[in-house]
Length: 134
Length: 423
Image 1: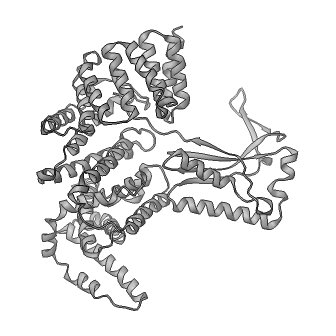
Image 2: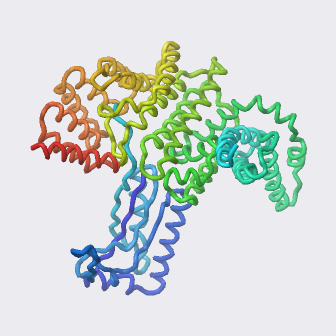
């Protein structure tokens, strides 16, 4: 079963004042090192389908089609919103295993090496058709 | 022979030769993990060279020699590292001759079984067992397996190498399990083959042809086990024939099962002229020859149910009382909640929708089913049959919200919309 594990980032003032940009260097390095290690672990377990980090939302755009079908771009309004900043897609035996991986990611080290325990949203990636009822 | 048909026949030949050569190499070197790598390399070398240079006189000996060379090279490297020469290696490398190959062919079929027992060992997770079986016995490349399961090749390579490591660590010997162990171990093998079949059969997303290949590969391997078993009637287990019949009878409906856009078409609405009559005949014949042998198991019963459907000229002609009788038997043998759901449908068709719905109410107590989308989907279907349109819409939507299958969600949403539109 494939699952996507989504990691978000809040951009309200309070969250931003504690965000990764404000951490000391060694904490940032420990965090990055942890994420690289986690990906390596998942790859070695034969479970990693893909993992990507997204650019910070500063340059993100909201796009809608105009009447002529052409794109109308708009800046995003970061106040009190949560943005996707990275995801993993994993192929595992069970939902429980996906939750386990999500919990590992959630406990990534933050300031002072303490676990962040950030929320990770786990959703199933849809598969092909099921067995037929007969 | 044109270039591409030569390549296809080489591909088939390689898949047939893989377990044979692997058996020989493992028996000689007693190292399954390393032998498997060596045979995969030999197979890749063959896939590169044969289309250009033509088939060698004895393809099997060619591959065995290449695999032996890889093994000895590797062992020499290791030996050198450890600063000791291995007499065993010398002996093994020099003593392999075509004459020995001929003798070893006799042991082939058992080898294939032994390999299957290893690859489908209960200590492996299903995903690992599937990947390893497809590579070591099926002769597929890691890239092909990765494509079929829509994961990166490196991930699949890791999955296979971990599976081999578990086999190594568990010290499973390269020999047939004892007679006492055999039935149970064979059940694990059949289960893995069944999973491979379903993986191909139930998936139309992704590279479609590759997925269908998985079903054919599962059928080929099951046929192989069946042939080996038939050659040793004293060890025969009728469930092998049951599984093969089930695959044939289910796969026969493949073309009718989805529409042009990949949309699901339920059994009752399928165009039966698209069903593969020849495959149905083969499945029915196999099943008819097997059932009288006694010890009827779950695969045979499922095959029998598939046969009853396949033999009905139209959905209305379906012999539901017989299907119900078969589900009653199956239910006594298996605690599978999906069997209970299918049984409820059969009850509704034989004794009326109300009876079927009663059964569904009772199934809600089963925690494995309570929140399962299939329970909601079956309830929606039965409510629709009973004329309760509102209830059907509610349950079709509830099922759509819970399913993990995209084509199934599309189907369920369409069903709900169809009923709402009639309002």
